[in-house]
Length: 85
Picture 1 (cartoon, rainbow, N blue to C red):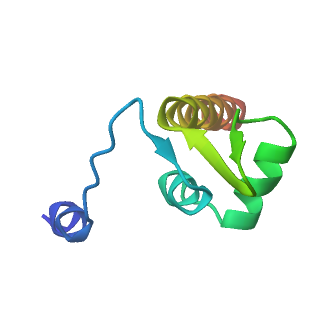
Picture 2: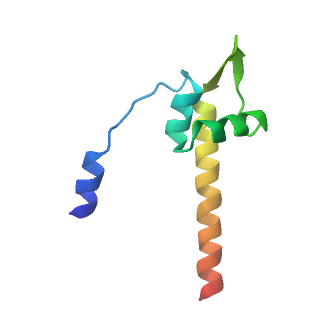
């Protein structure tokens, strides 16, 4: 029941797949700081485009990066569990 209570307190945001996100919005989706996201963009880890002096990130690219990071984390955790057993 505690897990449901914690989950119920979180907000839900619905974002269209074809939407472009600001760096603040993209950082919130990834649960990272905006400066860390900017470094990812500058390192070409996530594609983006510039509109004037602002950066825009496609929602699909943010979600793809998030899925890849989550997968890499799961693989690393599984490797640790296997190694420790």
